[in-house]
Image (cartoon, rainbow, N blue to C red; front, top):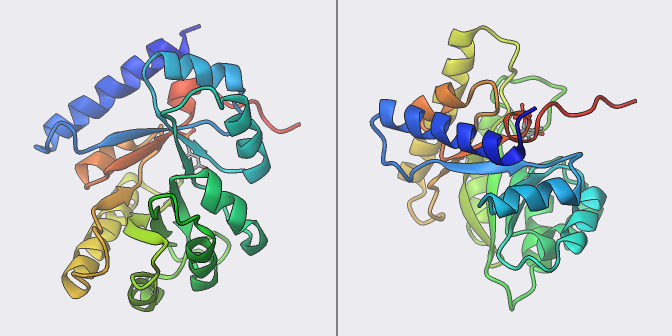
Length: 234
Ligand SMILES: *Cc1c(COP(=O)(O)O)cnc(C)c1O
């Protein structure tokens, strides 16, 4: 069985290779280690191996881990799961990034509840890129309004877009989904040059990170390839 350190090494090499092949800058793609269901000890192992950015999906689980790893100072916590609007206060205080903002109400609350002593919360808008009714994320046509409203919120910095395209679709369709997210961000940047850096595309997971990087990903969110298979829910 390979260790978390070995896995981080091989994921990092996959990222470097894909970045090079895409003709992109070596540091333009960052690894978010998705640590849902993983123990504080496993995260510690990843930190010892040099990993600093962790993505969590479930708030209570994340808060418990953040408390357990309180002695580690320079960890960046990213919230990537569905957001209940009555939970925004804890998200706003414990995380430095939120990838899964999909409605204005949540954005307003995160902004209001972000403590003024902290830098603005980095956010991505999650887009339902395959137009599936069941999945979370805003519709692409909602983006102009969301971007223009959110850019006014003082507690947030609008970094870009996130998507979880349906991994079951054919490779060409998956690639087209990634490309659509990239093009959508480009259009928003042209239309709303003052809205924020809009420099971030959070897309690509263990199985498709190469394709996502070829299409412009700047954060790849990697769980299984770093920590191994997640135990199935009993
Ligand atoms: C679990 C999860 C991932 C990581 O998926 P893997 O296939 O294990 O790499 C990435 N993004 C989100 C939003 C997730 O929930």
